Amino acid sequence: MLTWSALFVLSSFLLAEKVTRFADAWSELGSSITGKMVDVFSNIMSVRLFASKYQEKLSLLATHSEAVKAEQRLQWLYTWIFAFYGFSFLIMQILNLHFLVKGREQELITTGDFAFVMTVNIAIANFLWMIAKDFSQFSKSWGRITQALRTITVIPEIQDQPDAVDLVIKRGEIIFNQVHFYYKNAEPIFEDKSIIIKSGQKVGLVGYSGSGKSTFVNLILRLYDVKSGKISIDGQDIRNVSQDSLHKSIGMIPQDPSLFHRTLMENIRYGKADASDDEVVEAAKRAHAHEFISKLPQGYESLVGERGVKLSGGQRQRIAIARAILKDAPILILDEATSQLDSVTESDIQKSLWELMQGKTTIVIAHRLSTLLHMDRILVFDQGKIIEDGTHQALLDKSGMYKTLWDAQVGGFLPDKREMEIV
Image 1 (tube, rainbow, N blue to C red):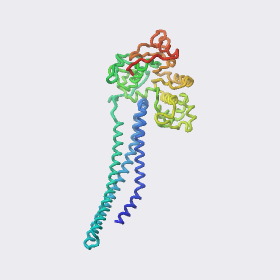
Image 2: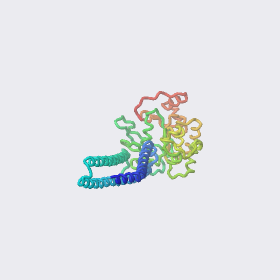
Image 3: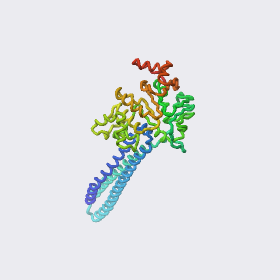
Image 4: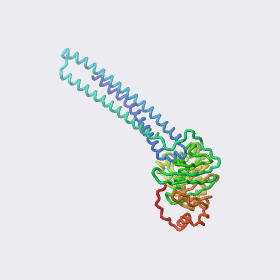
């Protein structure tokens, strides 16, 4: 028994380092998977708008594959250890019984000796049971990862048609043809809406909060499907084209952009995966982000924190603008793209945005009406309806809602928001 105990202790020391190394590797990869999933979920809008689902899927699968291999190595190691301990215990039991029988036959041991040996055997059995328990806990950990992977593979409501083709944009004309839309268990937002946004036209969207502006844009992005009617781009029903090709054709600058917990270089390059470093820097300069990036200790290699928490709202908006500049899509959507910028910076960036808009079909959502002065056309939304349509001056001459909003802002105050239940 002493010999067996010595061998057991020696083997434990020899295996401890390897077990620790394998377990640490598996645990680290498991944490990496969780971190990546949280990162993707936190930035799901960016993933969809930049058509990067496949790219993120590959990244997650690569980490998952490494975790599986690490888990298999650790599992095999535990299996061999368990088998070694079990086999050793079996040999020890056989030898103990043999010597107990011989000792009893020769009256060399007493009943107390027999009880002592059996007690030791029980202690060793408990030890092996603890190993089995640890192995079971390991299996539970693997089960949690499997459950998490099942969560991220939930089938989305909006799916490509089996025969979906890539969207081909030649002009960028957007047509709403008798569109009906409503959210689940809610009143209709758009009823029989028909409108044409011509190729290269710059269109501003105005209205009280909840008047339907964001829904209008979300339908173009096909974040929701219309209930009836159709939305087409250059004559192609967006339900019949792949979502990736649709999103690759649209550049979006949201009001509250979310960033990945990655470097500034990686976040800007998200607009164009194969962009060179020089192209990224040029886009940052045009978005007036290069100046603050250059002042950071690590420059473009600085990590921005989860959802970009290390940056101010204005800095995040400039990164989002740099992304859109780099993407250079034929259709551009700006949702309060400069709302978090100071007046001086906004004036400079407006010039860059105006250059970016040239030759593109552009839709601009704005509460600051001064940003829409040079739009080709302004649509005024009210309770899901377009109640006014025209240029800035033409709408002022009508003395309708647009003039009311304009006069309120020029006067230095905003009118009370209407209580609506429209998004």
